[in-house]
Image 1 (cartoon, rainbow, N blue to C red):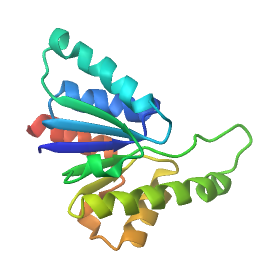
Image 2 (cartoon, one colour; image 1 turned 30 degrees about the vertical axis):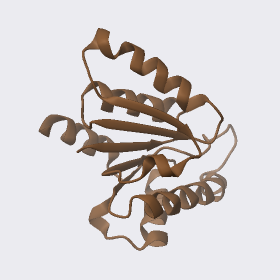
Image 3 (cartoon, rainbow, N blue to C red; image 1 turned 135 degrees about the vertical axis):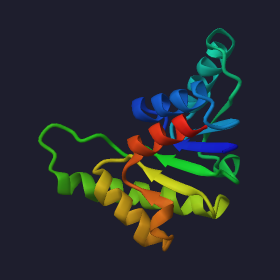
Image 4 (spheres, rainbow, N blue to C red; image 1 turned 60 degrees about the horizontal axis):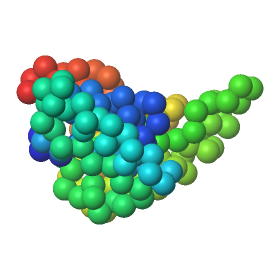
Amino acid sequence: MSKVTVVGAGNVGATCANVLAFNEVADEVVMLDVKEGVSEGKAMDMMQTAQLLGFDTNIVGCTNDYEKTANSDVVVITSGIPRKPGMTREELIGVNAGIVKSVAQNILKYSPNAIIVVISNPMDTMTYLSLKSLGIPKNRSSVWAALWIALVSNII
């Protein structure tokens, strides 16, 4: 695979991007976030370790610029808020559904053939939402994100 996009540069997204780059799963990893400068800073930090750790994947960070995600082979969606103390699963669904749907629609606009891996919580509901709202085939959206990443890492 030549390009993987990770949407969300929080702990899960940044770790995912770092693992993908370190294992050279793709030639380029794009990390996108809504917070100004966060993904750019994390991408810069990761790129500065490339020589030391021995990988040559290009890591790009961007803020809300979905054009930079264009032609991604795989998109990993990690965006959404974490569950807060006392928050029900239903409340989390209410908030994250809008975020994940918006992200998925923007991704599909620039990478219409991408495989979408949803890690946002609650993962099962967010995967189903992205699958249904985008109308993509089941084989292009996966709830088994960790399994997929491990599988791809071992194949390539």
